[in-house]
Length: 466
Picture 1 (cartoon, rainbow, N blue to C red):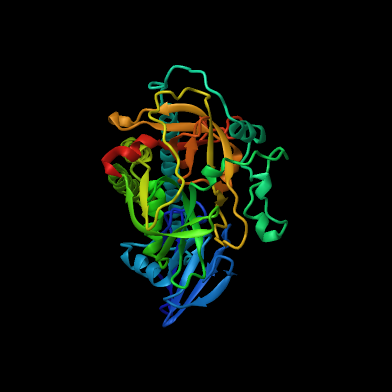
Picture 2: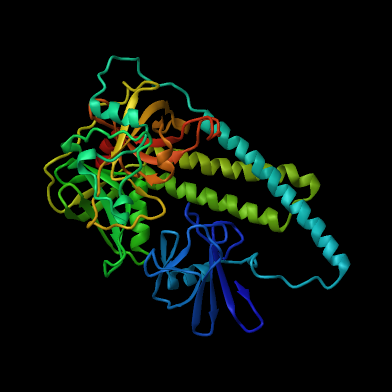
């Protein structure tokens, strides 16, 4: 924590390691914001972030404003209460001075030159280590084999998938399009080709749900993910969505519920159960990442001697690879089940197995996709089912004999709209997987390769009595 001569305390918040509080969320900038505490006064200041800083509601953007410890603040769309941020800052063992705060000048020219030389060595060490890590990351993503892919079989592609493929983007059903109001337009995804899509089967729309979290007063509800019914009282989603709900509930958003735009009704959440193996590997991924970040900070603050550089680089790469392996393992188990308080009258059927999957097989992701940057939930405006055409890329075997997962090609629309927890279906409308997360292109070149996404196979739902 940085202290000024007048006992002013500054707490910086962002994604990079030199912040007091490191929040690794996609919509948070490297140096996003800071809290300035002087006596009993707390001031929140945005540091020129990409997605802005807000108080109370996502739309209440500020550049600098006073806050109370009980206030909820947003970094992009990520919410925290001020007192929780202060607690996180207090838990920090050591806090480097934020780059936005000017440092005191050197007392001698010689010391300044020595510092410049040390800084150059430090950044060189970090740059080489990071380059090595990135190279290995791409090797990991390329290492998936086609083992486990079934033999090609003749299938009939229904009109719904043909329409989605023709549009080559996420589209809204034409007979349920909202009125052309500015707010309603935010709930409808753009059509890439200008063609109208075929309305989805009504049973599909009535089986899909939005998962919403809100503050105690229900003034700031926003969408966390999607779910789909697989039985009268059971809603399947991704374990990462359940994880996000738990995090939000611990940070001032205790109210969570499911909403059916088709029925225009809410369902109360009775229980949430992520796959046990997801919990296990998520904890290991977090621990491995903390180890990696601690080593990174150590090498940045105290660069290794030249003769120890290769050893230090190996340690950093090893820690990074452990984190990547744990991340891949948890993605394979990224499924969960939410139990609701009353029965639904429609649900989706699951494919018996994934053995029939083949490269380039046509699939479709269906859900109430929402804007990554503005997940605000307003049921007064029309919400329509969005469909994204995709194809099987390959079925990846997990490291160390862990479960397989699906890697599929998608469209650019997933870079802006979230399908988290949505069903991935085959031509017969059977669910084969649950959308987990966007992934890198096969060779890391987003200009020449289609965007990809990871999905956990639906068979994981039947394990451990989820």
